[in-house]
Length: 534
Image 1 (cartoon, rainbow, N blue to C red):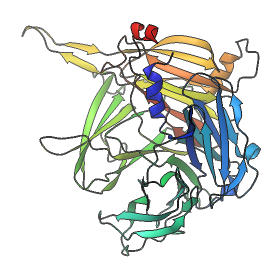
Image 2: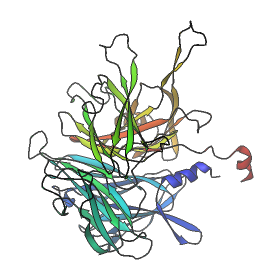
Image 3: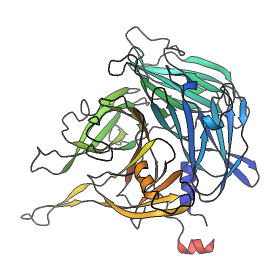
Image 4: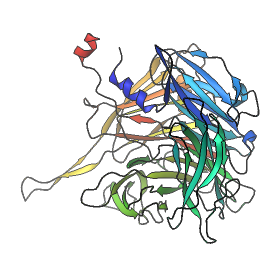
């Protein structure tokens, strides 16, 4: 029996489909190795983790390519048990230093995360796998190469047929004018790997002396030649130490949204911070308008009140509006130019972007969140997440990483006007009941209800606590990963309210990594009559 939920999840996988036999369809995912300006590719270790979006055993095969798209090592297909987390590890599975990219072929739709970490520098990054691929991808943020932040982007070109394509790069200037378009590769082969660093391996021609590029676009000359990629930011001269650098990485692709959501971890959360920990983070946002018209973006911030605000509500929602000019890229720092008057602890931040006019319509923009440690050289980056009724992810337990899952809701407090003039209005505080289920492979060993509200973030599920929890369970084999499913308990899962938002934060050595779990709103599924008919 298959519900329509599975069909939706298959669409969310955003993978290319290729029919290899009349009665079978394989799902393909493409992963170029991210790189940085100052740390060589060989200094990094890579780990791919993928989980199926359907129940049942599945088959996985990984093709490994060099920079020219030649197969370096063609691993045999492996059969995986239902519910398992599939892993490809560069230390274990890589057979050649010439390896630069992977192609994963699976018999089931998958969701994945690609990790990169560096023992020498103590850095870790995480990126979502399987963003929608297209013949053109936006580079949403190009830092000023005269400053201490640089960027490198790595792209893999793919196609269903043996095909070559020219690859060009174009960019927009600080004055929003289009710079010179450069042909960076000619007749680039299928599965060819491309890595570019503006100011080093990529010349930004057409810039005046006092100008800089702000965002760019990488395009293939053929609509049938698709691009999959990651971008890495490198922060140099951290805290004034020229020998100290830090990196963060994120996926390229279809990342523009008209609505996006970010949940914060509470500074008072004892699971995250102790007395010796730094006092929180700096949160900055790089916003890119790729449209040739003005776009209004409205930020909404929910904060907890401080003790100095006696008599005030325990939490409040505040709003700030900006107009992004055509092709403008703009930076916002939380607490400085974005909600500068905020004196509370942030709970969640959301945005809505739309055209301007009487008939305003949603306008997708790229909003990149960069989280930097205050007092420690931690840095991570990801995009704002979706909101939905269900969250599906996993937390690995056999690695040194320490991962936290933070879950919030879009609950609000709203006012009901009085029925009579002499009566006071009634304030209703929304609250969402969620069910948290934990699985080891196909076996569920935890099933519990929790309550969220407009001022609450659930941050209790982390790898340390999960290790303690499974220590109390009679598992017959070593537990390498726990799958997590969280959903609202509304009778109607398509109702407008009680939506969930989430993010995952991973700590390792002196760094952090940010990645969004899969968040979606399932279909109502088949009715009882429809199920019996199948």
